[in-house]
Image 1 (cartoon, rainbow, N blue to C red):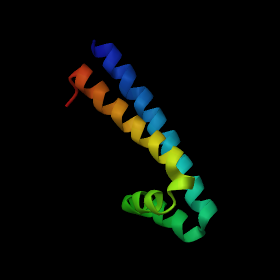
Image 2 (image 1 turned 135 degrees about the vertical axis):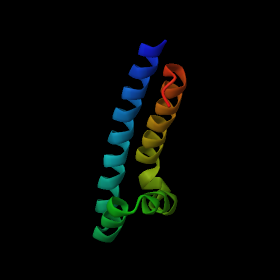
Image 3 (image 1 turned 30 degrees about the vertical axis):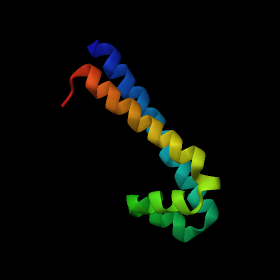
Length: 80
């Protein structure tokens, strides 16, 4: 079960990184200020996703799905 949990965590990290980069791209497409804000302050990414939900929905949920996979992978592997 440890191996499956580790693999699940790695897949979660990969999906989370893809979602985060995708959200950054969408933020930079909106404006330079939003892009830099999302890059430098993580809370700005959440605010951006709420304010521009139609554009940021899929990348934000992709990143969130990665976080869920990481959480369950840690539970299965017993990682601290």
